[in-house]
Length: 294
Ligand code: SF4
Image (cartoon, rainbow, N blue to C red; front, side):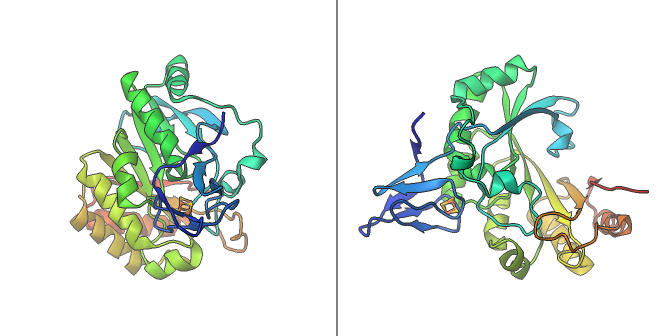
């Protein structure tokens, strides 16, 4: 399988390709990759090097995505490729997220129709695009999700929401449900710890919600980095006013990983305090995850 020409970019007179898939809008010189290590300029044409290259595939309970209030009790065929357009200091999946295709030479190629057949063969009524950020393999998600719908399957996106609205219009078209990972609720936090822009994430969350699809949100609570209760209250208020109190909110405990090994795990009492905050604000469903209570 040859690399597929990317969508969402333009050729510049300098020979660079300017990517319009995520708000980073990388300008990529000939022979180089964008920040995500997936999209590459070869002779002035931009390619998606991960199209259909499934590096991770598992059957998971839908609740593990996490989706608490959608097709409960079913399994979902979960697939991921490699690369990411953010750089979280605590990434728990950095082999996939910060790798590139040269590190996965044997990754099997799944044409979109074959992915749907593989899901059906495993008894899954849905496919989840997950593990690494699906926006960076948007072309494949778009084709695979359309093929899944033709086969009578549903589609789930587990995403950081860091995508331009022009790309989101296509990326979300055949997605039925999503969990967006909002990593904190301060622009400064996003810039310092993730190398991203919070406003762009909130725009794509709102856009997805406006499409009437099933939406849940997750926030990983990291001691000293984003566990300030006042800021979390602002997030909860934003969900209530800009979205709906019916949106399921997941708050998860951090455990030391990647470049955050020096930080302690999130105490259970912090998550309990956040749950009370959200409940007092009128959020109907609040889920706590990754808690280890001894
Ligand atoms: S998708 Fe990749 S290449 Fe495109 S702007 Fe984002 S990080 Fe850069």
